[in-house]
Image (cartoon, rainbow, N blue to C red; front, side, top):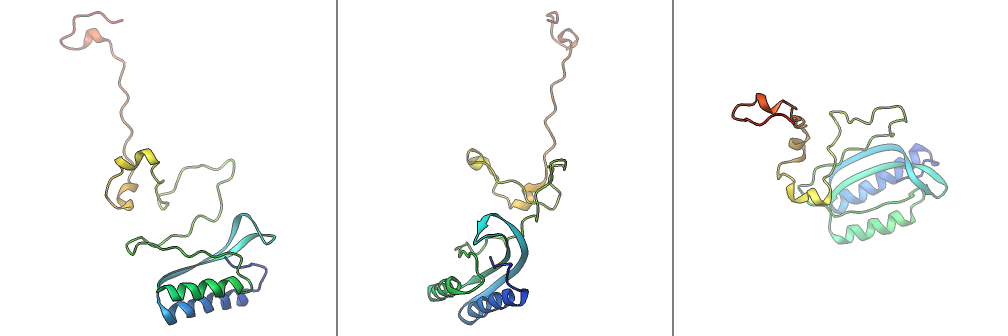
Length: 158
């Protein structure tokens, strides 16, 4: 997360420096500039940041070098390095804003399905997430019918 108070050229220079370090000692798999996004809370008196995202393969010495250089770089508000499984899909940028009070809270077709709750984990299918995005039709509600009209029943309706 880069400081939006710096000019775009300075932010790009920080991102290019990180990319150069990654490419020199590792393998850059994917890069994405998510742009300016509102922060959940203020960091260094800023309420938004320029998000840059890199997915790469590297050995521990590169991680230590990146950690050191990003800690002392001007314009870096916050950064995180996560270890992920190689088969983990590439992240898609989150929506830029939440729906307003009068807006519908229904998801669009292009949004990811919600994550299952802890209790649902045992029932989660082993298919990819894209296959589970298809909505199931709602279960039919039982119709209230006169029980005397059903075949094989001699009791009167209650």
